[in-house]
Amino acid sequence: MMPTTDNLSYNWLAVNDSSKILMNNSDLAQILIRAVEEADSSDRLLDAVQELAAAGIEESVPTLIAALGYNNPGAAVAAVDGLIAMGEAAVSPLLELIDDYNYGARAWAIRALAGIGDIRALDTLLEAAKTDFSLSVRRAATRGLGTLRWHQLPPDQVESVQTQVLEALLLISQDPEWVVRYAAVTSLETLAIAIAVTLPDQASQITNQLQQILDTDADLGVRTRVKFAQEKIQQQQHQEVFAPKRKLQDTEVPYRGGGRR
Image 1 (cartoon, rainbow, N blue to C red):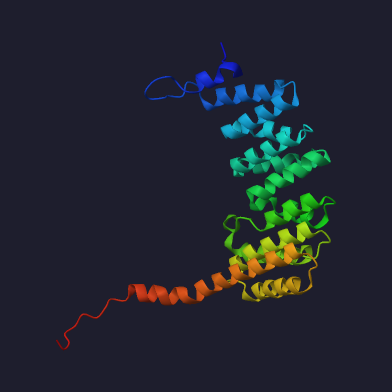
Image 2: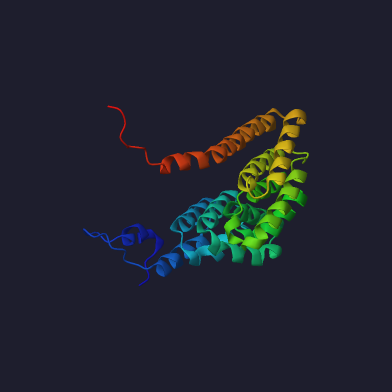
């Protein structure tokens, strides 16, 4: 007989010295998925989605995505966290279904894609960051543009895509909502560090834009975040300037020849 969620905690680990798992991932996933599907209250749904997300089983991705549309914010947050933890395995299913969602579920999906940072979500994140009517979605997508995994791109495409993202962030940094501008500053910081060597002219654009924001933005929180970004960028520049010298010094062999006693 298939174990139920009531005795799941007993069946999860064998009560012996080796603590062997008594069920495989597929069996566990089916139990946890059934618990989500059969939840008869908001609290039980939240608990079930949290358990499913914590299991980290790839088979659970469709159910976690479905949970984004259950009109249960707590369950949606848990599902987003689980999908982010799942990483690349969740990206294709999210992108394939995103246009079929109601707006609420789509907004949660964008948050998940932003948290994963997979380059396949670039177009979705760019569109959401620039045009979505919800400031929370624009903020999440904007932060996602700062966590993109550049190594996933073919080497000959990296610079052009980074330039595209930079142009978007420069625009988004003028968003009327301070939380979106704050997110743009965060992403401009990470992008400036990423392109400091490969695209120095574009990196200079970022430093100039940050200074302009510092001089003109009405929100203290945004200006404070700009100062932090400037410090981080300067630290990185300092490390890059002195790294070759330190490397050379590390490889030098001290002269131990004869000298005066």
